[in-house]
Length: 193
Image (cartoon, rainbow, N blue to C red; front, side):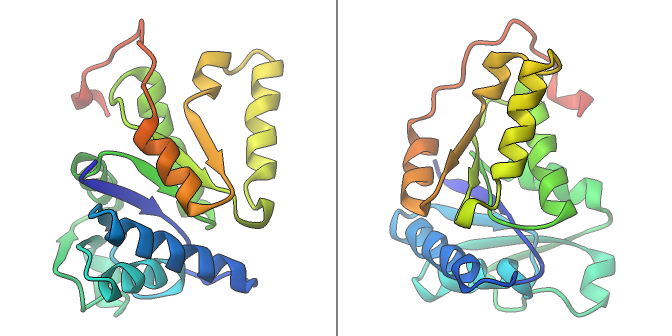
């Protein structure tokens, strides 16, 4: 894995453990020479993880829509900051540049971005691992929802297995690196995304 995309909050969250997890994940990526691809912001957990990778000498690629640059939210200290026209273009480029995906705690944008790449894996559009960093059980309600969807017949058990979840950055990163994408009966051309 050369690059991992991390989705996370543009807010820091209330607990210090969220920030600490972002720092730990950033340091770990840099130590393992894995580049960070993320939303290009300088605020919240987004700014925290980018700064953590940079302070350890790692590479960071930020992808941010023009409208957010104009609001002065772009991280100006990155080696590679790409400004795009729309959120859709941002997500597609983030996916194209990445070999796997991690969601740290965040809000609607984080949930949506993670579920979209997860759906692409389910449909066979991509074969990249997707993991949740479950800091302080933050993602337990979402994981319970996924389990409930299986119980109610809306999600196939084999697709539920596409979601990795761990409590520590090291365990999650190790899981992503070891992940073997299951063979898919349904494979869809990437251009449909």
